[in-house]
Structure formats: structure tokens, C-alpha cells
Amino acid sequence: MPLIILALAAALPLVLLLTRLLRRERQARQRLELHEQLFDKLSDGVLLIGRDGHIRQYNQAAARLLGKADSELLGSPLAEVVPQLAQTETLAAQRLQLVSATGSRLALEVCRLGVAGESLVVLQLASEPERSQEDIERFKRSQYFARIGTWDWDIDTNRLYWSEAIYAMFGHAVGVVTPSYELFCASVHPDDRERVRAGELRCIETGENHDEEYRVIWPDGSVHWLRETGNVVKNAQGEAVKMMGVVRDITEEKAWASQMHQLAHHDPLTGLPNRLLFEDRLRNALERARRNATRVALVFIDLNGFKAINDALGHAAGDQVLIATAQKLKGALRESDSVARIGGDEFVVILEGLALGGSLEEEARQIGEKILGALATPFGSENPQRIGASLGIAVFPDHAPSLDRLIHVADLAMYEAKRSGENQYRLGNDSQQRAGVE
Image (tube, rainbow, N blue to C red):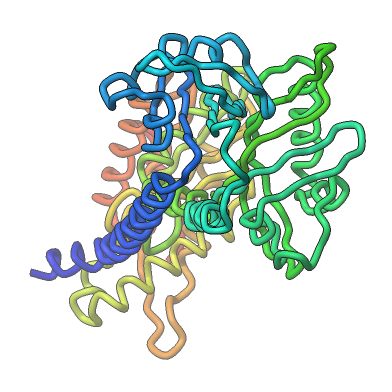
């Protein structure tokens, strides 16, 4: 029964995090549905073209203007539906003559905006009067709920246009600041500015799509993540005169990814790396040791008497022992060393950069005494508890040439130390060294 309770307690943070993620996913899905509803009510026709040149999404206005049925649009190559649009990568308010399904000729104002391999095509009857205020409000609301904004940048004058949704992405209210390229650059995180600028210049020089994720610092000092995509607009001489694109707030996506990565690679109780991350770090440590001709020591640590504390004082007290053990181990080691928790009361330590040619027994003695000495101090202040430990030490490349074998040797050595009594260590399969820490 205690094991079931312990398992449930360990799983609780995962359940809570998954609940929050599901709630956020539901909210995001609702925002997307509202965006699609508003998108479909626009009087302008809109086509979303995928990287393969096929139509991935369209609204009813596009189908009406083109005189096409659903089966003729969704998934069809743009080159077949509107050949004139497939011949040019980027158009800015260009007028095209199209032939409808009934054979009549239509004059359309067309703007095609490249977006990182994808593109948006906006269609409007050339004879149609300027869009109504209602349509404009629908479009603004669509951008707001989808957390997407449109921008264009005049390369020669540095004039920058933001749709209303973008102001909030940079921490400003609409109308409080005047968008400019200087304001944009000042808002981008200093560590990201050079990369973002290089991406823009590459887009201008080569015409390739622009796609960057970067951080912005709001006026209140908080940091947020944006993803910006776009492409260049060229004049009749083929010179790049403008960049146009969209920007999207991805702060929540980054937070979710960070939480999921933390959950997948770290122990929720102690915050230490779990077995998955431990094996990855050990693999990298062995690669570095091969390149640098150094040793790696792997130490398996098992706490003695931990079950007795759990049984006598409860699992909360046992959890505090595990947390304190993690802190003591991290405090006793170098920053270049790694500590992980791989089981209930089992920890591992990876020590890198040890010199070849020295005495393994002396190396093991120093490691064993250092770790056992750190763990020897009592746990807790109100009701101090002492707990013993058993250590198994294996050294690469002396004991094993591979990760799996090194783990196996250290594990066997730890069980040998555990059978020998309190606060002992064993080196490989043949060492009978003792730490002598009482």
C-alpha cells in the first residue's frame, strides 16, 4: 500500500501539468475555431497555399469569386486553379484578368504574400468598393483571437506598418507608439538581434523566405517569444523594395514545450535529471573522454535505511531526505559533474575529466570519501536523521568500453558495497576499499 501511495504522489505533478496543458489546448482550439468563423465571413477571397503549391485552406468568398466547388479547391495545385498566380512568387495589389467557370471575365485585385514556404493569396473584385468597416473589424478580430498580425517594412525608408494585433505582442497599446524599424530592433532581445537582422538581409539579398523565432523585451521588462515569417516585394526592375509577412505570439507554446521537456527529463521531486537524461549525459561524457583521452567515473549511490524512515516518519519525511540528498550531492561536486536520480532512493553521479594513468584505487578513495562525507551529516533540524549510503564506482575506459557495460559494472559494485555494511564503496568487481565514514 505505501508503494501505491508513493507512486500516486509522484504521478500527481504529471497529472496536474497534463490537466493544465489540456485546458490550454482546448482554449487554443476555441480561439482557432473563432478565427476560422471570422475568416470565412470576410468578403475578400483568401487562399492559403502550402509549401507544395497546393491549396490548403480557403474561404467561401474565394470559392465564389473563382466560381469553384469545394472539390476543385481544397488540395488542388494553385497552378491549375489560377495559373496566373502560380507564375509569380509575390504580388502586391496586382490586377489580374481571370475567366470564371461560366466563361465570363473577372478583373481581380490580387495580393500574394509569401510566408516561409507558404503563402496567402487575397482576392478582391477590382470594381468592388472599398471594404466596409464591418469587414475591417472582422479581420482585426480574426487576427486578435488567432494571435497573428501582419506587417510590412519599406526597406528604403525604414517605414514599418503593424496591424493592430502586433502592438500587444511588443507590449504596447495601439496608438501609444509609432511603429518603426528602430523600435522593432530595440525591442528584440539583444542576444537575438544579430540573428534576426542576418535573416532579414539574407531574405532581401536572395529572395528566400524569412522565418525566425526570437524574443522581445516588453517595456515592463518581461520576455516574450514571437515567430516572424515573410518575404520580399520587388519592383519592376527586380529590386527588393519591401518585406511583408506575419508575426505570431508563441510564448505559450515555448512555455508548454519547456514544461514537457522538464517533465520528460527531470525527476519531479528533486529536480535532478532522470534516467533518460542521465544516460544521454553519460553518453556525451564518454564521447568527450574518447576525444580528450580522459577518464569518466560513474558512481551508483543507494541510501541505506531509507525505507525505515519512510515507515517510521511517513513519506513526507522520506521525500525531504531525498531532496536533501540531491542538494548535498550537488554541493559536493564540481559544476562539470552530473547528478541524477534514477529510482526511489538511487542516485548516480558522473565525474568527467579524470586523468589517465593514475591509480584507480586512489581515485576511488577520493571519490568515495567525498560523497560519503557529504551525506554523513544529519538530515533535518527538528528531528535529525542519519542515513547511510552504499557506493559502486566504475571507471571508463578501465572497467568498460561502452555505456551499458559501465552502468552494469557500477551497479554490481554498488550491490557488493551494500552487502558489506554501512557507508562503503566498491570499485569495479575486484576492489575491497572502504571509505571509513561512520
